[in-house]
Structures are given as C-alpha cells and as structure tokens.
Image: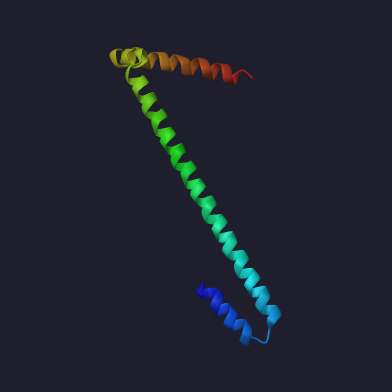
Amino acid sequence: MANTTATSIKKSKSTHPVSDKVQDTLHESVDTIAEKAASTEDKLREAAQSGSENLAAKQKEMQDKWQQSAVKKYATENPVATAGIAFAAGVLLTSLLRRK
C-alpha cells in the first residue's frame, strides 16, 4: 500500500507520464512473475520431498528383502562357490558379447 501511495505522489510530480506508466507496468509484471516463481518453487520442493521419501521407503524395503533373501544366506555360507559362480557367469557373458 505504501508503494502505491509513493507511486501516486511520484506520478503527480513527474513530467514523464509515459515512462512512469511503463515503469509501473513492468514492476507489476515482475511482481506477478515473482509470485508465480515462488509458487512453482514450492510445488517443486514438495514433489522433490515426496520423491525422496518414496525412494527412501523403497530402499528400506529392498534392504529388508535382501536381509531375508536365500541368495544372501547362500553367499554368506559359501563365499568360494559364490565367487566361482560369479567368475563363470562373467566368462560366459564375455564370450557371448565378443561373438558379434
């Protein structure tokens, strides 16, 4: 409200009415854009927060599944066999990919 009063006083004393009108219009446009940008920023922050929470929940769920997994149990109980299986799978995959 103080800005409007100051603008009114300025208009009455100004000798450049067109420039003043353009200036006022530009100020209003900038204010409108700033409000829209703030609103959009808030929406983006909320979406990012929601996405982060969903990702954390999925990560926790996957960790729980891995902890209860039979594969983890087998790998822990048989580390040499697990390494051998991984090596064999790597050799097989490499040979398949090289045969273009």
